[in-house]
Amino acid sequence: MTIIRRRRKYVRETDWSCSSCGTMNKGRVMICKNCSNPKESDETYQPAADRESQPEITDPELLRLAYAGPHLKCPYCQSDVRNIDIHCPSCGSNLGKYQTDNIPESESDTHHKETIEVGGVKTNNQDRQDYDLPRQLATHEVEMAQYQPTKILPQTNWPRYLLIVGLPVILIATFVWLMIFLFAKYDENAIVINISWWRTSAIDQRFVESDENWDDNMPAGAFNVDCDSQQRGTEDCNPHGCDPFPCNPEPCNCKWVKTNKCTDLETGFEECDEEEQCEECFTDTCYKTCYDQCPVYDDWCSYDYHVWREIQRETTRGNDHNEYWHDLQPNGELQRMTQTSGYEVNFSVNEKEYSYEPEDSVDFARFNIGEPWQIRVNRVGSVEPVTRLMSEEP
Ligand SMILES: [Zn+2]
Ligand SMILES: [Zn+2]
Image (cartoon, rainbow, N blue to C red; front, side, top):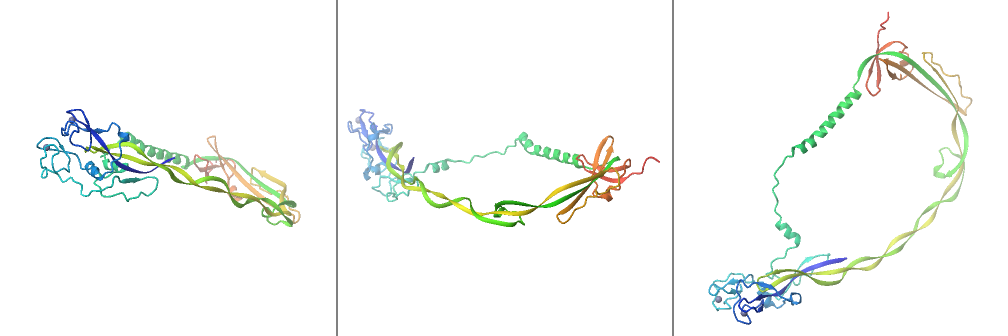
């Protein structure tokens, strides 16, 4: 994995071609070395033919030329003049008054400035001085600077709006209607077509059972308990380092790599980028934590306990009001009896049947087969008898 630790800019010299004699001149000269014609504005700078092997410019005097700003034009002979030159290199005219104040305020032998930190390594600022370099922006800063908030006109998308608002309204309305349809109660005139009752008596008897289990799984009330220690399982123990793996990466094998991104300074020099690229080297060996398995002991117990089992059950039933229990009776302390009962009344409304379960014998006694009743029902099976109607027959 490659880490980019930092970037820096450096300066290289460019060339210009003399339009009079075709000679290639170095960026630092303003007069053709062959024919002595001055450089003019249409003789633009171009990267040197052997650009890659061009040395980095470190001479402070040349750097001063590089960052002097775009050339001016001599008003007398039309040749190019450096923005920091007092005299035209071609005709010698004094351009002092004509000069702009574009001269760097301070000179420096600094030849680069480091600008970006990548990979978390703090950059040394010792080389950074107030050199009149254009401030280099990190990529995201450039993007921020260029960002213009776009005005978005409020736009109403009616079909979509209706769908978002209308669909839930329809769903809720449908749900409410369904609830009302299912649970709304209404009265019906019904006839009692059947009544029924049942009474169940059950005898349970207590038995003694024997079993064995871990002590925390024993039933409450266990007796004749006899326990001894046994291995119940294992647990993690003796933590120790294992499975070594490389860790704690640090930048290493760093080297400066040219990115071939250059800006023509239009002064006979160009400013180029390079970045320091590093690999990741692991400096340590780390270990995971492993555990041994150690036995865990617990009490294993044999014991007796009581359990109730149903040994007899009798049910009586009928379709009248003569309810009675079976004559089943418990026999001694080791037996006990439980009794349960239930009732049902069936109504008929135009062949449709409704079932009602009275709470007790008193409630059940109100109903007789063949009697007309007003009942309150809904569509999910709720049935409430309201009142007994006067018999239509005399
Ligand atoms: Zn020439
Ligand atoms: Zn001139």
